[in-house]
Length: 174
Image 1 (cartoon, rainbow, N blue to C red):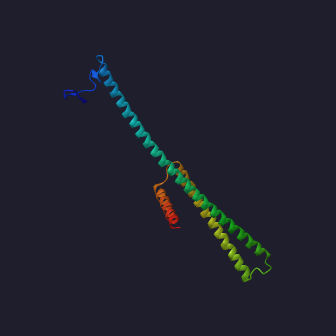
Image 2 (cartoon, rainbow, N blue to C red):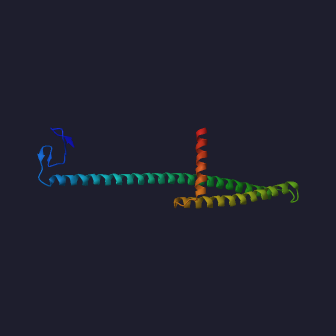
């Protein structure tokens, strides 16, 4: 609306827009087109808002996937450490068995009995380490599979979040 020469307010969408006389009905058609364009604009804005929400959701999901991948890498590193320890224990058991075979001492001497006891203890440690390792690997595999499927247990998520927080705090403390 604008103010006319006599101070009255006149409509801009009347039959005399900007001093041009519009044919009958054309003013209404222009108004309808303007309303249509306005509703199209609102629809486009709504679509944009929906797309932005979807993008935010996808970014959140991608971050969770990155965190899951990081946790999986940590689990893999831990499994490698366990494998290394098991290998070292196996080598030590083997070398002790070889040393025991090469011993010329009589079977009942305290030295032989001590070595046999040490071998047995190391064999038990090796068995226990292998059992523990298998259990840890199985647990990490199941958690990783659930995480990839988007079905990670809430307790596991909470614990993993705490672990990540502790790592961040340790990294900041360095």
